[in-house]
Length: 176
Image (cartoon, rainbow, N blue to C red; front, side, top):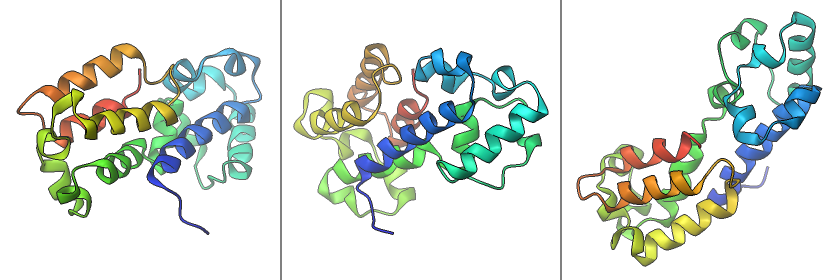
């Protein structure tokens, strides 16, 4: 299998989420925007065992996620279910690390996560490194999932002198 770029990894996660939405075979799910769908409990959309089994069969085909027991669907959102096998936080971390200051691009994950955001993206939210990173994020995360409000909050984190990368990545991956 060919490798994909970090930005393609983030985009792929959202493709998988859309595949989950289609796999519901539900008018209700189809009419939801992607963020609402992501935050909705699986059993709210698929209350019966038959619907849940059909969903699991469908996602085994596309996007190819199998082996999920029906019991795993209880009490979890669609985002949470997808994150169990494909954590968005990982894709976001890989993307941001690839766009960070060159001194951190090859750092071990633990070292990168503990780095200050100011070291990863010198110049804060107005600096060239973060401007490129934000452009990449907005190009691959649907606007409904990476709203202007979330972007403003993320920029505040980038500008806060004591913020660590470990504060930034989960904030982006929470969606909203």
